[in-house]
Image (cartoon, rainbow, N blue to C red):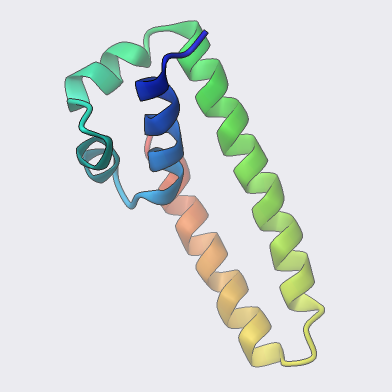
Length: 91
């Protein structure tokens, strides 16, 4: 079972622009993050959270494309894609 620090870091990784930023926000040394990446339980939860975030982002993007205001829909969908690319590059 993950401890509170691990759970907080996973949430921070979802929202942050970088590993460094996420670790700093929750006060976990980066070396600890890399150590946790060697534990199957942490990696499994991180992967699960990434997949859930991706699935929700795709659903949001589909809804944005259906928007009557196409400028907002495409702009927001592009931002989701950009953020997700950054997110998946974190591992």
